Image (cartoon, rainbow, N blue to C red; front, side):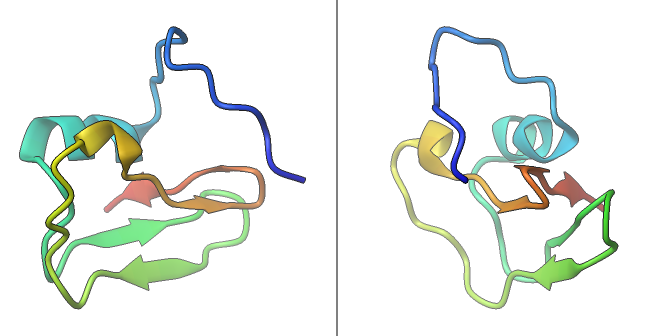
Length: 66
């Protein structure tokens, strides 16, 4: 079940912090689910203009940048 997004809520997850610090995801970046261990490797750079729209979720939480 998708959880509601509230842009006024401060997000403190590592994946979001990584995206805010480094811009949008780039080829070679890896994200991991802290719950199940699934990993996601970015194979093509993201060219979204709005970095706040970029997020990856698994097991109900944001993936962590590794």
